[in-house]
Image (cartoon, rainbow over all chains, first blue to last red; front, side, top):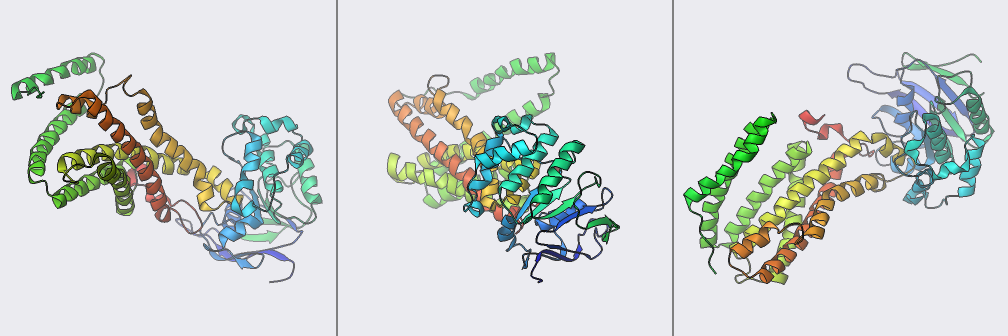
Length: 218
Length: 265
């Protein structure tokens, strides 16, 4: 493992009922990298992120901070990752409870929920802190996406996986969030996005098509 | 006081009460006629058979025979639970039979050895009906609880994945689903206990009173059996869910969809 390497994927393939989704896909993410993957619908962008989290069975090798993702190690590796799903479903209850819940997990015992930090992030993402008292089920898709992103950021993980994490937001808010994330120097980001105009990072952009990744010309 | 005997003719006349639901079904075109006939027929045959069988069970009063009969009841209930939950029998029959046995035997032994203490201790007249009452309620609670647990997990997989992605262990990620399942399975018994004696005179108490015992004795039995039922249902649902976790999730903590029966996928 190279010193800066934080996530490494080698020869990845996912078996679907009729064919294999990836063609021995390989990818490397270094500390502080902010990498974007684009590609047509159904090319497997979301599946790639779900493989890293151990949500989809795969062949090949994925390692997080040098540790291979397998059934035994995944429980220690997920606390290194934060994930924002395309259409996040965060459970039931008020936003404050949703944000606080992960802090009760054993893996997050070293962290403390800071309401002030949550309020600051809400404001930063164009939401008032009154959202903390709102029922999560009453929020719109865009509001839920921002709450999911705040939940992920509060956990202070070194790697952030974003699956079309701003797809329900307007262009201004997308840029606002993109700029905020780009400023998080220590955070490595692997973002899957259709929107190459408003939600793309300056580091390499890859295009996933026909099972393999190709670096785009910037 | 002796119980008034019901003659066969009088019992047959009792079927006359079916006239009311049948007329209502026909009048409103409710499609329950054939299932009503099937269920009434099944109930009659099963109860006639069990009445005949219990007569000999009580007569012989052999502890091993009693245990064997309880085992048969557990296995029949077990198959019914797995089917009712829409899960695959081959995978689930053993852990759920174990959970059912634990849920029935702990309160049964507690009741027989500590509270009632009949002589002989495992008298068929006490052990078999009490086991049957606990088992019947465990069956209902298991179907509500375990079916609810696995189906809620399948329906709300994204919520479950969100917990996993936030670093939850399996036990932590399933916790909201387990809590809901236990709530759904146990709330009816809690509601029944709260209204007992005011809204309803329960079957067991009625049976004991009709059997010639005084109402105070009947009430004591009813309280004891309700506590046993409540405790048994809580045990069986919780143990049932925990015992089936290893076969229902991959090493990565992902729910295996092949655990669901073919007609429930």
